[in-house]
Every structure is written in C-alpha cells, then in structure tokens.
Length: 182
Image (cartoon, rainbow, N blue to C red; front, side, top):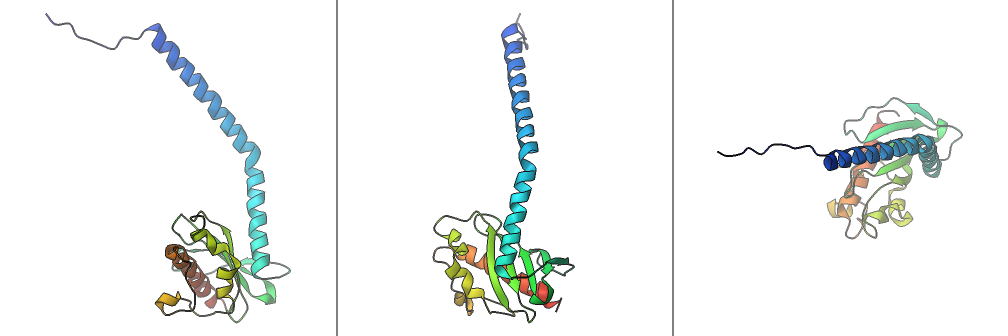
C-alpha cells in the first residue's frame, strides 16, 4: 500500500506566513503614507517646471489653455499667450521613453523656443537634446521641420537619432496643432 503525501500545515510555516504578511502590510502602509505626504509637493514641483518651461519658450503675462486638434496624439495641451503667440506641450516617445517638451510659437507660427521639461534618454547621447545648441536649431522655423539627413535643417544628435527624430516629431505636431488655431 502506498501512502499519499498531502499538504501539512505546521506551526513554523504558519508563523513564517504571518510574519511575512505583517511585514508586507507595514511596508505598504509606510509607502502609502509617504505617497500621501509627497504627492502634493511633487505635483507643485512639476507645475513649477512646466511654468518655467513656458516662460522660457515664450514670454507672456498669462497663458490660457485653448482647444486644439491633434491627429498625432503627441500634443497634450495648447496655451494662448495673449498676443505673444502659443505654447504647446507635446510628449513624443524617444529612445528611453517619453520626452515632455514645451514649444513656443509666435502669432505667425514661427518657433520662438523649445524646452525639454523631462526625459529619460541615454546620458551623453539622447540627453544632449536638452542642450541649448540643439534646441536653438528650431528657433525661427515654421511649417514643418526635418532632420538634415532627411533633407531638413536640423542636425541630429550624434548617436541619438531616435531622440532627435522624436523631438522633430513633437515639434511638427506642435506646429500642426497651432496652424489650425491661427
């Protein structure tokens, strides 16, 4: 006759399960409390970054959110900056994830500035998109922009073609969104 082996609950296993549950519960409560304490501070910090980026790309007394049309899904918000023009918040996807940018445009639709608010591109490669020398290439352009290897006027970042292409896609989406508002 063969003996069947079954699940046997002993005191040591039960004690370990209770300890692990208690430890997990305490950690979950601490994480929840930390989130509760810091979420407003993080939101305020992100809002301050966005306001600074908007002021960097287009100086204005106020920014009013307006309705827009976007076929790309990259444009998140468009702000009218009085008579100064528009600021467009775009989020194209780069090599390391989303690149959150602000693009400023004058009333004629020419780019006044480009600011990278946040990104997680490779350090020393795609992260160079936030450098002034790269961003300044966009100033004064209108209509549609392209990388120089595609017959355009924007020199791609060395070793970061995906990031460069993403920034150009975001700028083109911003230009298209504002063209429908002028």
